[in-house]
Image 1: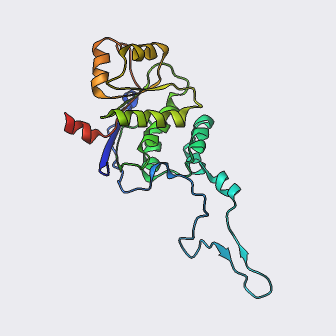
Image 2 (image 1 turned 135 degrees about the vertical axis):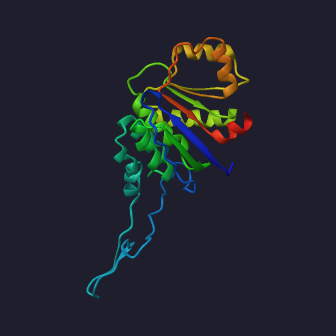
Image 3 (image 1 turned 60 degrees about the horizontal axis):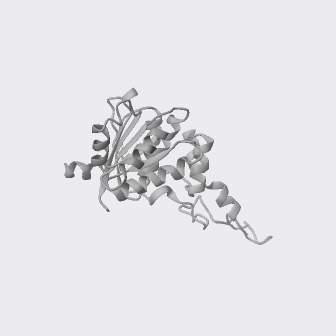
Length: 231
């Protein structure tokens, strides 16, 4: 969908009154590193240094492949994320945070409630997933619950969380309708730290008593506007 989507993320243990709005027109998902050198955007960012006289040849200041590779993930370092998450970020090819990530990650790391709005494909999953997984390190049980409106989105979000957090030891899963209850019950008994679920299947599992002792630290409602429209 090309429409904007609201993404409320709640942290019940430290709920605050402040909510921030994040603009919606941003770059593509995950800010993937480009294999080409960055072009100059202003006069003070030249791509070539010309000599002041004719005494010597011009020297081109072009990034090598090693320079580009070293820059992958560098834009996420100021957030102070753990080495395991940084490894996932680098392997995903993320170079620098998109605007929704730059605004949301510090707020969620600080334990604040947040409502974010951004276009599809701008990295919303990493925006809430990275700070949630950072704060969940060393905990046990189901701590991150993400509600999504469709099976396809559940698989997509769960896959992204797994890719970014694969080295943290956190276990992720996607529960949707059309899947085996037995399989999902087995996964719950083994332990899941981050669950992405559609509302219908989540309600079924709650009513069957599988969430009696569950108290997530993070609850995310992805594509909230669509789910509200669905009722």
